[in-house]
Amino acid sequence: MSASRRSGATDELGPEGSEPEREGPAGSDLLAALLDGMDAALCAFDADGVVTHWNREAERILGWTAEEAVGRAGFAGWAVRSADAEEVEARLMSAMDAPGRQVNEFALLTKDGRRVLVRTQSAAVRGPGREPAGVYCAFSEVHAQIDLERSIALSEALLEDAGWGVVLVDADLRPAVVNAYAARALGAGRTSVLGRPLGELLSQGVEELESALTHVLAEGAPPAPAEMWVTVRTPEGERRRCWRSGFVRLSSPLAEEPVPLGVGWLFQDVTEARQGEQEASLLRFRTQQLHRAARAAAECENPAEAVTVHLDFALAGFADHAVIDRVAEGGTDTDRVRLVRIAETPSGAPGPCRLDGRAGLPVLYADGHPALQCVERAGTVRAGAGSLKGDAAREWASARQWPQGTVHALCTVLRSRGRTLGAVTFLRTSHRTAFERADAMYAEDVAAHIATALDLAALLPEEG
Image 1: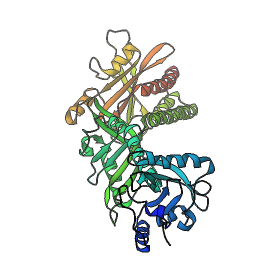
Image 2: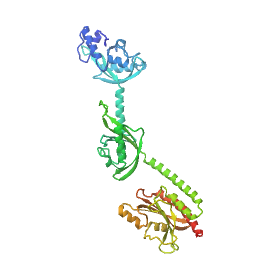
Image 3: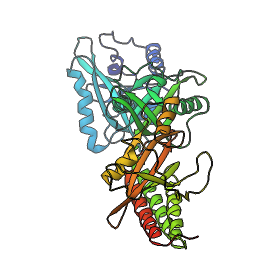
Image 4: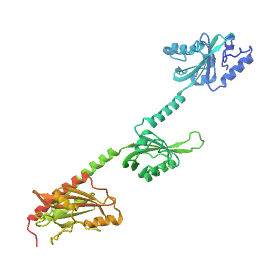
C-alpha cells in the first residue's frame, strides 16, 4: 500500500530545501517506505490543502487508510468535527507563511468516531523556486505526554501546596524529599532534614515508624492508613503529635525487575482531633465512675464505708495511690494545722482502701507540705518530683510521707457544710503523666462526695 499519491505535485513535497523527487516508481516507493517506517504519524498537504501523504502510523492512530485519506481536501467531514474543521485547517495551513515549525494541539476523529487529542508539528514545504508548495505535518497522541505532565504537576503540587505531609524515604530509611507541610511538622527546614536518620528528628515513636517503613519496602503498602503517636524534637522543645500515615512502595519503572527506590510516606496531623476524642472518652468514663460510686455508696450501711467506696472507684484509671488526712481536733485553732492519717491505699500490694486513724496521732508533715497548703488555702495543690530520678526521687516521696515510687501528687481539700475536714491526696508513679487541670476538676468532684460521707460518719456514734 502506498503512503503517498504519485503525482507531479506530490513528488515535489519533501523536507524543506530538498530537491524534487526523481520521476519513476523507484523514487516514489522509496519515499513511501521511508514514511511508513517512521514511528511518528505523518501527513502532508499541497498548497490547496489536499492530503498528499499519509503513513502507516497515521493509519494506526486514526484508522483511516492511505487510500481513504490521500486526495481528500483537508480534514473536514471525516477526520475532524465539522464545527472545528475551519479552525484546524487554518492552523495547519498557516505554517506555509510562518518560519520554522508550528506546534498545535487539537482533537481529530478516528474512523470509528472516537475523538483523539493530538499534538502536531507543521512546517512549510518549498517548491523548486522556494515558493510555498504545501505543508507537512507530524502528529502523535498526547495522552502519554499529558499523563506525564499531570504526574509532574501532581508531584510539584504535593511537594509545594499539599495540605498533608509528603516524605520520600530512601532504602536506608532517610528522608530524600520533603514537602513544606512535612518540614513544618518535623520542626526543621526542607533541606536540613534530608539524609538524616529519623531518630534525630523523633525522640519517641521512631521504632514504630521505621518498622512500618521496613515492612512497606519488603511487603508493600498496608491496606489502610495507620495512626502513630510520635514525639518531635524541635528548637522550642519536644512536641507530642499524632500522625495519620499512609505508605506506598516506590520501584523503578525502568528496570526489568522491580528495584526498590524507597517509600512514599504521606501523613496528616490529627493530634487535636484525637486529643479531643480522648478527653471526651475520659470525661465519660469518669462521669460513669462517679455514678457507680454514688450507687455503691448508697448501699453502704455505715457512712464510713462510703468514704472508701468513693476513693476506690476514683482510683481506677486515675491514680496509683491515695491518702485521706483529716484535720486533728483543735487543729484549726492553732497557728499550725495538724493532720491525722485516717485512710490510705495499700502500698506494694493491691487492695481496697480502709479507714483507720483511731489513735489520732498527727502525721509528721514538714512545713510547706502540699497537703497542709491545700487545707490552708481551701483549694487544690499539685506537686511533682520534676527531673529527680532514682534515689533522689525516692527521698522526695519519703520526705512527704508518700509511698515509694511517687513522682506526681494532687491534693484536694475536703469541705462540707462550710467546714474544712481535711484533704485527699492522689498519687501517681513514674509510668503515668503529671496531673493536669482536668484531673484537678475530677479530684474536686470526688472530694465533694468523700467529704459528705466523712461528715456524715462523724455525726454517727462510733460502733463498739
